[in-house]
Length: 74
Image (cartoon, rainbow, N blue to C red; front, side, top):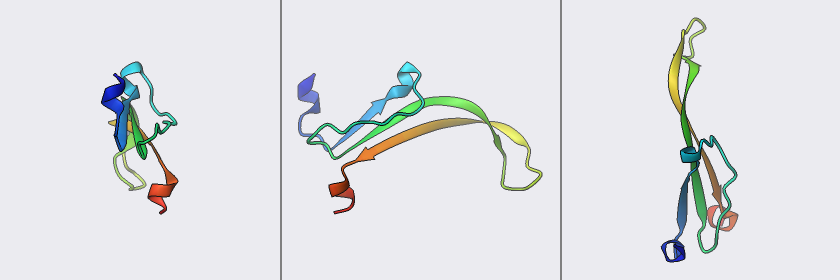
């Protein structure tokens, strides 16, 4: 409920639970930052930076962050 969100400084949202991959999370005062965790996807990626590197399947999870610039920048 609302009591669970009172006096927090950082929030974390699991948008992956509903199939989301990334978001533009909105900060709810008095919090100063929020993170959104996207779903894990198995995607093709190069195994290294070498020119002949093979393509391998890797688990990729995207994360989105928003922060109050007054806290981050001073």
